[in-house]
Image (cartoon, rainbow over all chains, first blue to last red):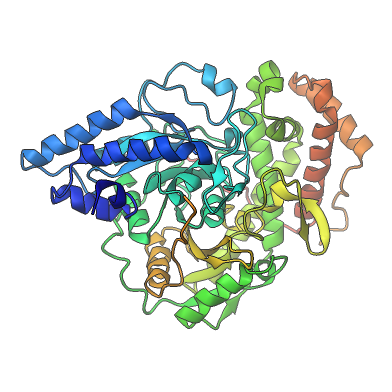
Length: 466
Length: 68
């Protein structure tokens, strides 16, 4: 197998080849940089390529191996991060024009430091929707990242570059963030796996926030075992993230091979309404493969989405208040008016949403006393053409941008861990995603069911054009 | 459902809120952003009306986002 073709394998396979010294980490890094150089122009996934850093990191992995040491479980695995993660020496742009005027970050985000400690090799930063307020992958400053299954279509957002880079096989592993669906939507649109862990599980330190009480970080990859390996590498307490929970960090890579005995159900109600052709069929294929016949209703899921909308826009608007005062016209027009409006909304709306959120959390946790994992669609439609402004929902024409999160927002509102798996193709041949949802702190159950779907051949990354 | 829950704002009401809150926060709203900001306030008011129509009790505290 050539080094270039090794890049079509998943991260765990690449690490195994490096650790066995069948290939050097430097050769993998060089091949990755060459692939980015040849493919990125069509996808616009990368905004920065950290070539010198990557070659240095790869050389360090090779030196450790040559000395008989252990460089880590992700030895030599090339990866990239959404450009809201601090990368030492680069301004953290977070998809914005304003951010590129920042001084260079003094050090890496915690997640990057941990992946590097596991031997992974950072190769660059990825395009995203401005300040993460996005479901499309479009960006007025950097131009849109493009879907490898059809470059005229959206990559999904806000971690659009992450989805495009993994689906286009520029890297096997990428980091994104998810506030209302920003890992799960690009994973679904681009046909890759994405993990949004439990809120408070992984440190967000060094990643620019959007709506702090909803923000998560997580990986996108082309296999479930890669999600698990990246998650394991990023586990651990970090005093620099005040939202991180005091909870034991248990690696999951060795605990996801068996999903038997888990109580499974399909989400009905809100999650069976307003889907485009092909979306619910993907959920049903997954349910059939696992023998799932039970349906459950997440109570008040539509209202939960409304609460998520309010909390997001108000927390986001407040976070950006000083920047809006000084440089409102430097924002992407797609985010500017939403941030401005969010900054102005009454506190009573925010507190009502937070109080409802606590009620909803209790109601859904009660549901999880009788079920372990729930299947639901990821997005109401496959990737639309770039520039699309509206969609049809329940027979009505509605704005596209906020409604892409129809099925993701009610879950992240209460921080549930979710694996988004590629669940097949729509009638027009585009990837559609399925959410595999577990109770808080039960990532291994969601990953075990995702792995079972992968073994059954139901969940797999479709071949992209790239 | 609460019968006293608010109705979504009209555009005129949203514009009035925009101007009053902008003054309260010393946040100038550039003129080209007025229409979009008002539209987003109206959208948020629709979501708020939906959330506020749900009956909550005195023991329904805001979701915990602070730990001492």
